[in-house]
Image 1 (cartoon, rainbow, N blue to C red):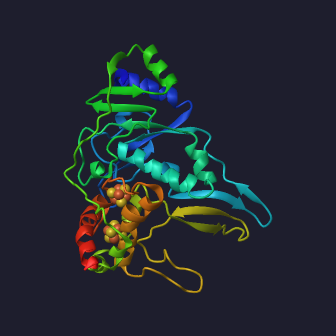
Image 2: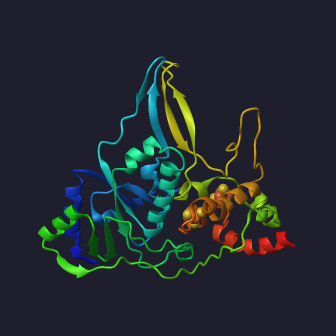
Image 3: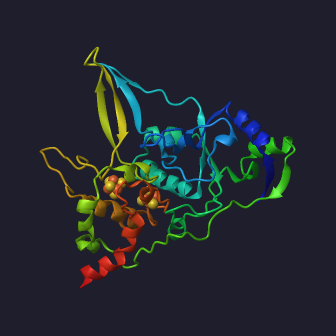
Amino acid sequence: MMGFHVDTIQLDAWLIEQQKYYDIYAPKVFVGGNTFSDVDCIRYGKISSISEVVFDRKSEYSFKEVLTPISQTLFFFTEDQCKEAVPPERGAIIFMRSCDIHALKRLDDMYLTNGPADYYYKRLRDNIKIVLMGCKQSFENCFCVSMGSNVSNAYDMCINAAEGNYEIDCRDAQWKEFFLKEGCDRHLVVADHVDENPTVVKIPDDLTADVARASLWEQYNKRCISCGRCNFVCPTCTCFTMQDLYYSENAKVGERRRVWASCMVDGFTDVAGGGSYRKKNGERMRFKVLHKVLDYKQRNGYHMCVGCGRCDDICPEYISFSHCVNKLEEAMKEVSK
Ligand code: SF4
Ligand code: SF4
């Protein structure tokens, strides 16, 4: 694609212009923001300068925090009235890697087409623009090539970053006009992407739900501590729970929030009447893995997992999702005997 060579000053000028209309989100460093003291965290936050964007490392949490906030107030209520929470006044520009753009497609499946469109998701989704961050190299635990998410063309602009110099491909006509006016050099630009990852995942062609009977899952009963971190970092996990908060000044007034939930933690499957399902951690692991690489595809035609590797990065017990998937072939042989 015919794009531009731009420098930091030109990109910052573009960001300043866009901030008039959009909030701009990208992976950035939160100093001391990690679980462990004095350790930084890379996650999504608002940016105002291109120098804030972390291009050379993977974000621990994904873009989904922007579209599906960890805790989102849907409406406020009194005894006899209900008032919808005010939506963001402006749209959003989100910097995303190719795997995350593929994950966005999965979020759209679940929030927009898996039944009636979710009103709160849609009103945010209708007002976003996407900036693809080119990947110069594969990061630890990534297996995007195996999952076919290493390349994406679904962007409004792509950026390849190299030490203060940037190549961009603009598909948004107004943004293209901006860089033309800035006098940026025209240049042929192809989004950086990887063609191989050190981690390779093979999902067996003959995988069926029979694999649920394999002994593989039992090892996770002890290894997994059901902390749910793998779900929270996953860009394709969308489960939430509802919470009604009543204000202490007046117990008849409050707000309804939806809050992220995790299929790996206690209580997720509790139902009326005292029922509870998948009590063992191995059963929860089985449910999560097979949802990501088996039953979602049966409905949508492609796997839910996009191979970002964040679940492997974050697990405090060093449980590897990709290793587990690679054991499915043996597990299928076991149950087929
Ligand atoms: S697999 Fe790891 S991150 Fe996920 S719930 Fe179990 S211990 Fe936590
Ligand atoms: S299951 Fe793991 S590797 Fe797959 S999309 Fe979720 S976090 Fe990424």
